Image (tube, rainbow, N blue to C red; front, side, top):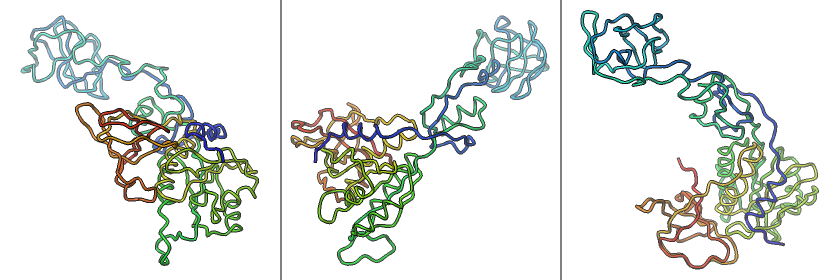
Length: 396
C-alpha cells in the first residue's frame, strides 16, 4: 500500500465531496448550521441617529447654557417636533435623537428644575450613535459558508431575517467492528472492552454539523460486515476498526465486495496509519478509521472534520495555531505525528506540552488533552521554546 501524506490524503478525500443542497430553517434553528446564502441588511442599523446614554438631547451650539425642556424621546417613542435654539429634550438610551439636536448630555452632568435644564459644554456627535453606524442597507453582513453561532444569529436578526438558508446536514452512518467490542450496558467478556470510539466519534461529528446514525458493533464476520456496509444509510459511511490488513480486518474486503473504488489506501500518520477512504459502487463515501480510540479520534479531526465541512460548503481548512514547546522533543520518524498535548499561556504567548505517553489506546490521555501537536515527518529534534503547530480541540 502506498502511504500518502496527511495533506495528500485529505486532498484526495475532499476531491470526492461536493456541497449538499440547502434548506430554509427558522432563524432560531440555524445555530450550528452553515449558511447557504449571503445575508444582506434590509435597512440601516440603527435606522436613525440614536442616543447612547440617558440624558438630554441638545444643540451643541447652545452649550453651555440653560435650556427649556420641551419634551421627551424614549426607545420606540420619538419626540415628534423640531428642537429650536435654547431648547432640550429628555432622552433615553436607544431613543431617536430629535430633529434639530446633534448631541446628548448625560444626565449626571446636567441639572433640571422647573422646566429648565442646565447643561455643560459639549460637542456635536457626543453620545450620539449615527444612523447606519453598525451597518448600511444592502451591506453583506454574513457570507455563504459561514457557520452560524449565537453572535452571527444576532446580526442576521438585526438585519431583519426570520429564516435563513443553510446547508443540509450530511448524514453519517457509523459503526464499530470487532469481536472484542461490546456496548454498555452489556457485560463484557474477560477479553472484551466497551465501545468508546464510535460514541465519541458520533458526538464529534454531530458537533461539526452532521446527522449521525450509529449502529451496534459488528462482529468479525465477513458476511455480517458486508451486510452492515450495504445497509448503512448516509452520505458518508464511517467505520471504526477492521481498517488494516490483518486476518480479522474485514472492512476493506467487505467494501470491495460492494464495488469500493479506493482513493486513499493508507496514510503516513501516527497514530492512524490504516485509515482509508473510497467510494462505494452506489456513490456513498466510505471512511475507514482505526479501532484504537485515540487513533480514530485523531484521524476524525484530520479527515472527518474537513469532510463534514466540505459537505456543507464550509472551509475545510483546520484551524491551526502556533505555540512554543514547554519541553524538548526528540527527532521524529518517517510518519507525521499528531501528539496529544496541553496548551498553556506564558509571556511569549501560547505554549504546548505533549503528554509523555502517546499510546493510541489511551482514552484517558485524550480526555485530558486540549490540543494536537503536529510533528512533521522527519522533523529534527526540537527544544523548549521552539515554535510548533497545534490544533486546538473543542473543550467544554
